[in-house]
Length: 126
Image 1: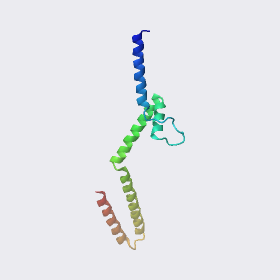
Image 2: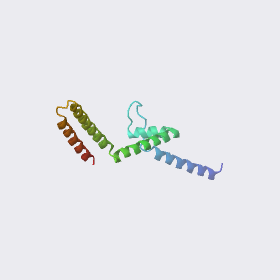
Image 3: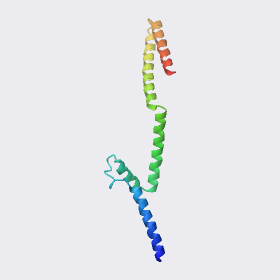
Image 4: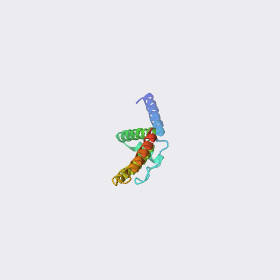
């Protein structure tokens, strides 16, 4: 092998070692215990040590879950859940009111109360 080829290979090796050092920067020395949540440094170590197939699977899942989380944030998912819980409570009140109508002694008052509550609820939805 010529001196020129040896120098070329040494340059490629140095470049590969530099790339590997950049890739490994920030990772922990070990993965930490498998039965605990990893630190960011341990997570990077586990990711870097995984096969290419596993890394791609992880990347796909992280991207999908990030997109789902963004949609939840953008559409105020938690706020809508709170709203639905309040609506459920209101509907239970209406159902109970209608059950009282079966008694008929105060049907007009209960019906008016129910209609008033429905009007308020509808205005809140707008």
